[in-house]
Length: 197
Image (cartoon, rainbow, N blue to C red; front, side, top):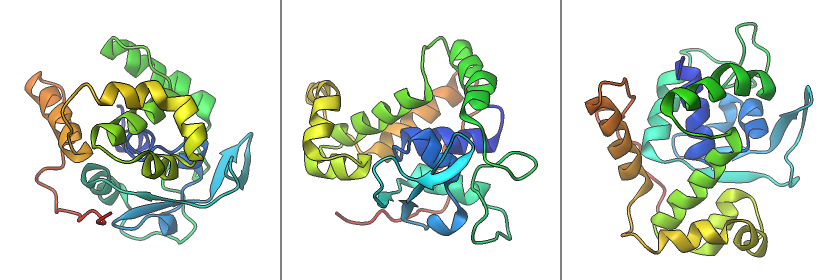
C-alpha cells in the first residue's frame, strides 16, 4: 500500500468488515481502543445512513487497533474523517479502486476488489470459530442473509484448525517482512485488549 491511510483502509475492510462507503464516512469519534461504530456511509458524494440503516458496533482486533492508533493525528476534531483526501474531503471509491487497489493487487499477483476484503473478514471470523449469530452481527446482516451470502466461506473454515484473527494477521505480515516487503506488523505495538465475548 502506498500510504499509512491505505493500510488502515484495507484493515477496516478486511479486519473489521466495513463496506468501503462506511470506511470513507468513519470519523475519529467513532473509533475507540476496542470498537468501531458504524452508522453512516459516503455514497455518491453524500453522507447517508448505512445500507442497513442500523448502527453497527464492530470489535477491533489488535493489529487494526494499532494501525488506527498510529494513523490518528495528535489533535483531531470529533467529526474529522479517519480517511480523507489531502484537502480533507472523503475519499472517492472509484478513484481509490483505480489508483491504489487495482495496481496493488496486480503487483501482488491477485485479483481483488474492495468488497472481496469484506469476505476476508467473514472468513477470518469463521476461522476463529465464531458463531453464525456473532458473524452476522459484525457483518451487519441478519443470520439468514449472512448464511445465504457467505455459507461457502464459513463451510471452508471448518477444514482448517481454528486461529485467532490477530495471529493470522501478524503471521501474514511476518511472511511479507521475511520476503523483503515492508509490513506493518503490530507485535511490538502496545497491546489493545480485545473485548471478551
